[in-house]
Amino acid sequence: MNGNKRFMGHKIRRDGQNKADVQRLSSGQTPHAIVLSCSDSRVPPEIVFDQKLGEIFVVRTAGESLGDNAIASIEYALEHLGPQLLIVMGHTSCGAVKAALGTLDGSDAGSPALNALVGGLHPHLKSFKGKKNSANFSVEGWSVADGVAAELLTRSAIIKKHAQSGNLKIVTALYNLSDGAVDFKPNDTKPSTTPQATKDHTSSQSH
Image (cartoon, rainbow, N blue to C red):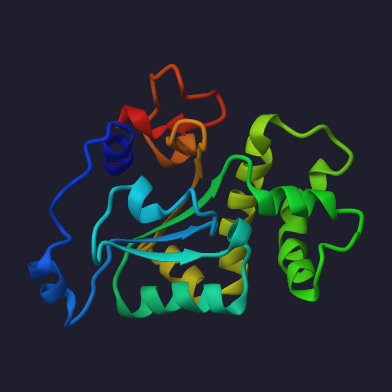
């Protein structure tokens, strides 16, 4: 949250990325968090959270769609690297979410691989079929992030084990393309008093 505040205020850290850091990390890594996010070029977690070398373990797929490779990457980090936080982060106006909404009727997304990707998002968006889209697809984006977070616990015994033991906290977030703010669910953060925080989620700008 503090890193996102720095990013929004254009006060990016200058530490953590020099030659000494490269050499220090050459023997191993101990990232403090895992971030599962969309592959969208406008939403790189290292930049929007102002994190440097070796600090976060990032897994990116379009729309945070889950496949075996993405799940295995998270499992590897949990079993071998020691992070205790997993953030599942969507974003507003997500192209993958739009594509998934547009194919809820079973229409073709363009290729077998694309069909598999949007098909993985369909269960998290089926309640929106036939409804008017929310502004910037933000409600739908939250639904996918929440659904993917829940799906991780049902598809991975390793992730579930770490979460149930109390060694892992899983939170969901949404990046706002319009202003660069990352919003977290209220039950994941302290209540916000900033004007930009909506009644549905809490803005990281208050932290």
